[in-house]
Length: 225
Image (cartoon, rainbow, N blue to C red; front, side, top):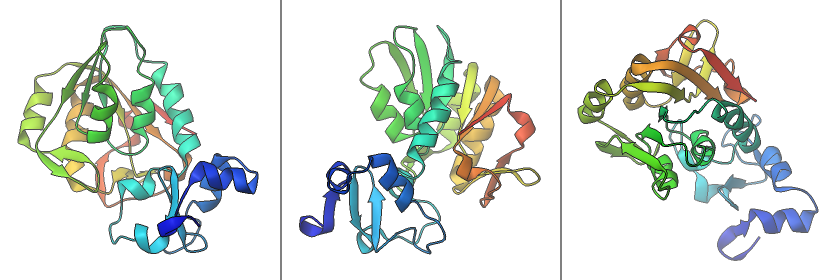
């Protein structure tokens, strides 16, 4: 392991003679209590020691960022095909949606509404995208904002398509997430949208998180890979 117990993912892949996706897959939580294999976590583009990535939260943006990355990217690629010229779209928070943000078609005069810092950072450099960021109290663990101002702004917007993420999708318990502050924003976006789409990787299917916000029937389509 490199200095300070940190190693670049691409360097590890080169040394082992495997792909980065293989390492991400093999290090994804599979019954390990702390989501680590051999005492290490795969976070972002790096492999770090488990003690450096430890945390007591039910959900951590950093811990989730590389889990099932290929599946998240595939689900978003399928969903992005639906984005049309002059659409106003809502992009939810989480580690799946940055893949969708990067796939917003160019030169289509698309308006994007979001409440997540990582989504805003990706789209803020796009001159061909009108960006509306819903502010409020910042929640570092989810890199997202919450507050009445965001809800009131959503009430004034007409949204063509809402792309919603989730931590769990269950046949009887519905669609859930880990953070209760996200619930009003997700629900208002679904209410204001002409069409709502659920975008998740397959690891979320059959899972239940603490904060319920929708039923599967509220979505026109579920994109999952």
